[in-house]
Image (cartoon, rainbow, N blue to C red; front, side, top):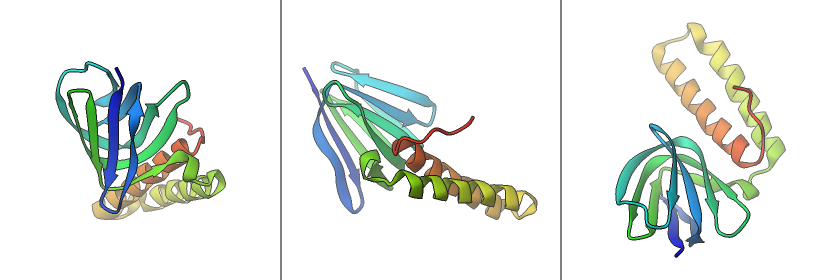
Amino acid sequence: MALTVRVISPDQTVWDSNAEEVILPSTTGQLGILSGHAPLLTALDTGVMRVRPGKDWVAIALMGGFAEVESNEVTILVNGAERGDQIKLEDARAAYNEAEARVNQVQNGTRQEQIQATQALKRARARFQAAGGMVQA
């Protein structure tokens, strides 16, 4: 039995289809969901969600939110989301490099500047990874 998966952001539904498996970036680590999963409500971190509708995986960059699993339905409400196959890899790489440079620039800045730069880096990393880019740890 397949899962029904919906990824909903404030301005669009990014994914609404069946899937065999889902991997979510929860705030406590990666979370795998298969058919028959126990009911669950979890907070999501900014990161890459992977969904497998058939034999191939689809990557979706998530910008934080919540996921609910109940009766083989996975509902994901996020602040923003973008399918990896709709992100230009070179643009995502450039944005990631800029965000990384910004984090290095504000190391001696205010706490607020550091937090904003770190959040921007997490968003840029998620988009870059969803587009297929590799990030050094």
